[in-house]
Structures are given as structure tokens and as C-alpha cells.
Image 1 (cartoon, protein in one colour):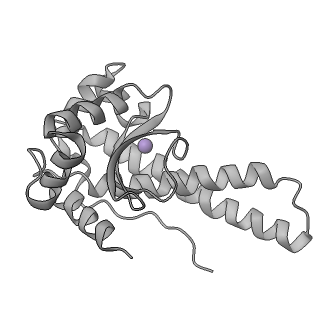
Image 2: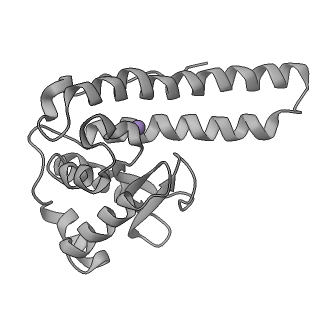
Length: 201
Ligand code: MN
């Protein structure tokens, strides 16, 4: 059975400076993200043991732990690719049109995603998602890695609001970190994800 693995960063640790310091990216990727990958694989092993023994007394905790770690792995895998040293600015083309259609304006979308990220209570994420049933773009506020989201929605742009994403550089001032995130958004990657999401059957 295949296991989850830590993807390589698409740039050097310090490539996003001055917006995000290299020591943040190094710890975040090599320690935090790696822990979610290990957690996902360990939990799959424990579920296999439970099936072998026919003992599902720990199933509730295991399923929650699986969701936490798999979702953490997926969101971080998207997060790294959502950023680029050449990022920032605004989206173009189809994605820009869709943002205007679903949020009224880029400014409206910018305000909503900034607020969703800044005002996460505790740990979580602000995420632009495509919801395929209603064919809508939504901003979702994710608690931890997996709560409070629409089932089936596809994350396109994820802003990590956990303290580990910014504390070494921005201390307690999460709004300044969120401002910095907009300067590194890789809109080409977000647009590629959008095109794939709307094409999926
Ligand atoms: Mn994180």
C-alpha cells in the first residue's frame, strides 16, 4: 500500500523573503508538515491493525486523527505551491472573471479571505475553494485542518493561519502576516487548480 510522503519545496527556504523568512519556511516544511505526513501514515497503520484484530474500540479517535493529518498534509502541499518568489499582484483571465462573478469584485474577495484568515479562532486556515455542486467559488474558514468546510469543495488557495506559519517573524500580529501572504500568491498555480476543478466530471 502506498504511503504519504513529504513533497519537496518548489523553491529555496529563503526564496520568499522578505515576506516570509527562511527559518519559518524551513521549520514549517521540514518539521510541521513532515509531522502531518508521519501522522497520516502512522494512523493508517493503526487502522490496519484494528482491522486485523477486529477491534474497533478506538475507531472514533483514529478517524479524527486520520482526518487531521491527511487534511494537514493536503493543505500544506497546496500552500507551498500557492506561493512563489515571483508572486503577488492579481489574477488574470478566467480566474479573475470568476472571482468578480462570485465575490462582486477582487477587493471584496480580498477582504473576505483576509478576514477569514485573520479571524480564525485558534488554529486554522482561510481558503478559496471551488464547490462543484453549485459550481461556486467560496471562501471557507478551516478549523485545525479539517473542520467547517463544505464536503467536496476543492481548495484552490490556502492561507495558513496557524501560529507556526508566522510567529517567528510577525509575532502576534497575524494581520501583517496575512498582508504579506498576498505579496507571494502564485496566481498561475491558483488558476491551474481552478481550471482543473471546473473541468472535473
Ligand atoms: Mn502549517
